[in-house]
Length: 264
Image (cartoon, rainbow, N blue to C red; front, side, top):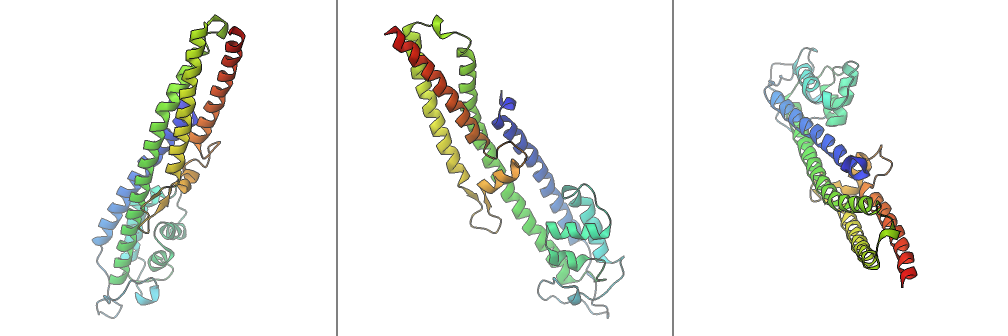
């Protein structure tokens, strides 16, 4: 039943995205662990690299050959995180662009082979810090996806109940029903309409929530829906389904009233 509705399709979409994001979280963790094992280079003169602030400029990292620590870090990124960012890397430039999209343009610049920069201590700290920030963002995304799945599953229970009832009841022509049966069905529709109203209110409340609102990884739920259901006929699967069900219930109720009036 679920897979035949917008809500059922939405649950499947959320499950796919959750699986993808869990894989991405593990990949970023593996990348950070590997970077932690890459030894930083000196400043090109035999002296150790500075322990100063985060370096986002290659000018602070000295120079080196392409086979240095930055190349190793790029290789680690290509093996771990990149498969979750793009299906097709078209060389070093594409890889650096992907690093920028995942972490920041500054980190991408510090690791770029075009600069010839060494993998300094500061660059290492910047890369690991960027990976940790990305992990927090993914964790916030996973929390938002969990909230969306719970909201969808709760909605699906009500929607499936109403849909099943409408399907069963429509198999019996109204002319075959007695006055008491018509009255009972009318009251049942009233309860279903109230359930639809409550479901719509609950869903609107969910749309107004923000996951991680006190941190830098905050995700507004309505923006999440725009991303998740970008290719759907509607980015509001629950509200659209509830509105359609409400319309069907009201049509059914009007037909019932016509029959009840004729039998009074």
